[in-house]
Image (tube, rainbow, N blue to C red; front, side):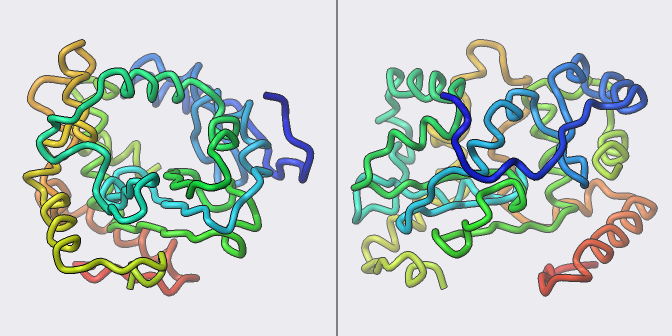
Length: 279
């Protein structure tokens, strides 16, 4: 799919400098050649994003679109709605995974290798597109907030850092000898009405049961346990961990806590976002 006509992509792509390449290679392994920086804040992205960045930025939006945006490991797995069954707020897979469809799972893997904009364009106009993204808002279509519904999921950055650390360990992205402090130093550098839906008591109970942490851990559609059989996941690590906030306290020392508090203060000063627990 070629680039769509529209606004020029407003941000510049840059290569990682030698110091950044060495930092990543020392901690994460052979990733530098697949990573690239974008925009004035130097967001790190996988290189294939560059080919589709302008298409995503100019993606035609629909009033029925629902975006769930977040930094990775912030909990947007808990915001998944099955788009093709209007009365269901339950994931397409059951809590025990007995409906796991290997053929559909393979189709999903094929889709992941295609440009996102072309995949989304194929969704019929009669269907609501539920779109999850970890892209910053500045890289998404500029008319997004005026056109579609957007749920932004925010989580305490300290908990995000801890969760990202275990995520990197799970998928063998982080070298085994690296501690959380090593990773931190690298890291440092009313809803139903909103969607126009009403849930009855039975549906609400089913939703709560579906989203309970124990059921989520056992749900094959979100726990990636099938990848363990082919050696992708590290032994002793899991994709769904505790499902609780505040776990950062078990990993941050005093120096790291001060660094995190300063980062949070500096980056939230121009917003009205405040995390309930800051100490």
